[in-house]
Image 1 (cartoon, helix red, strand yellow):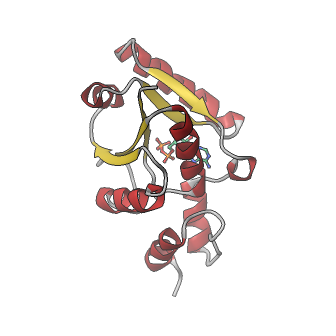
Image 2 (cartoon, rainbow, N blue to C red; image 1 turned 180 degrees about the vertical axis):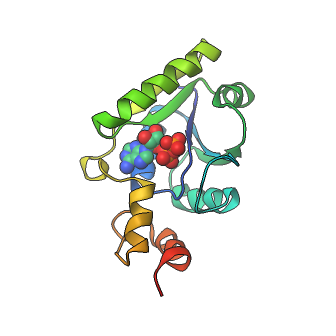
Image 3 (cartoon, helix red, strand yellow; image 1 turned 45 degrees about the horizontal axis):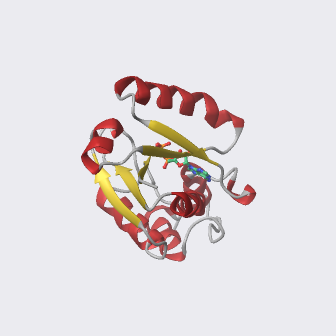
Length: 160
Ligand code: ADP
């Protein structure tokens, strides 16, 4: 099976993202997590930090790479010789936006196939923004993100 891209903001990477990458790596020989370098998007962590956290979190999964990209995902597809775009589907609320994006990408590049994967049930309601809110309120996110990601979040957000 060919290469797949898994684009996202990963601000920061969570066990939900990691679960999706692990599933994708069973189907595709090469999976590239593409960290969006988008100056218009409000993020807590800079692109380099998001890439570093993703690399550290995904290093145990064979065939997985991490890169940053600032353009359209359809252009990244061509540059990397990838044929599929992986996206994770959680609740029904993800569907509308994800469909819109998948069809838009296909309009720009007819060869762009989006593959939707579902995470393990325990991560269905997990999102990066939820994790950030919990840390900001002093809560424990040990079951949602790897320890070094939790450490970075705490240093950045924890009330002193
Ligand atoms: P984006 O800004 O592109 O939505 P995210 O980092 O929030 O970036 O998400 C990237 C992809 O990972 C999306 O397809 C999203 O649905 C998926 N995703 C995020 N969290 C989870 C999770 N807990 N389980 C499954 N998929 C997830």
